[in-house]
Amino acid sequence: MAEPRFDELIHPSTRLSIVALLAAADWVDFAFVRDRLSLSDSALSKQFATLESAGYIVIERPMANRRRRVHVRLTDAGRCAFEGHVAALRQIVDSIGEPATP
Amino acid sequence: MRDTIGESDARLALTAVEHSRQQVIAEIDMPRWYWLGLAAGWIGLGVIADVGPGWLAVAATIVFGAAHAAAAQNVLSGRRRSAALSVRAELAGTHVTALVIGFLLGLVALTIAAALLIDADGANHPATIAGVMAAIAVALGGPELMAAVRRRALQNVPS
Image 1 (cartoon, rainbow over the protein chains, first blue to last red):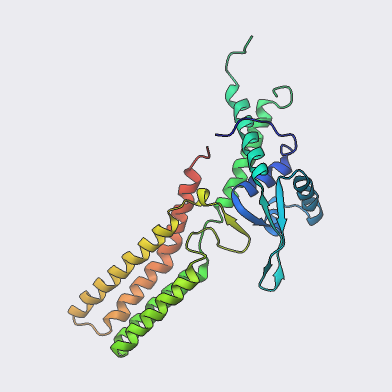
Image 2 (image 1 turned 60 degrees about the horizontal axis):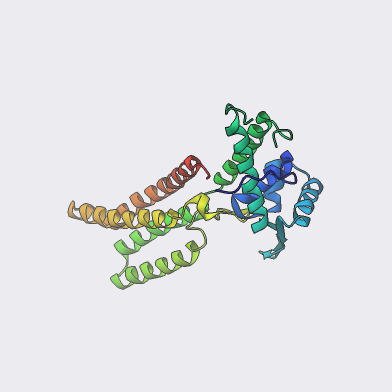
């Protein structure tokens, strides 16, 4: 299990949903993420740019059936950050009800 | 950390993460063309076995097997239903390929058994009849098998 580590970059809701989608896949097509999260191309591109500049994702442009696709994948650093963030969220939820430490 | 985010926010965030995971799990499947092509091939082989010479049935079976191996290699894992994404192996389960192959081998055995029984009963075109039965099982059972894989993936709580 990952070490709990809250990640401010991942936490905003749209970005968290994007990273969670990417975390469940080897790679995801740009259009899939856009359609599932009901985002515009430009809004999604901005989110990807932020994640890419942090080293959390890589964007690839393979050719498929003579069409250029845009595939996005989580890097090892991105996956590590996501898993740490989810662990931190679980820790917050799980710690409710526990007696406060003095 | 508690100062930054509350319990309800954390819960909402985890719900969003789970929703995204479910959206990817919903993509675990095999293309529709795979099951339909397999069903059509099964019927075709049955017809050839009934009306064609023995060598043609053997040749058609070899060609069908080779075509299936070539077409199925990228889709048997259930992780590539479409060109939209590739589901992670640990999410889809590493057993999907073995499950599908086992399902198909079971159907081959049932097809042969059914054809022999129908033939013993004296009916005409036993291989065709058995092939149609297997084709129906493939067309209906294949997608149902993948639905079971998705249900299982949903039940697997991520660590």
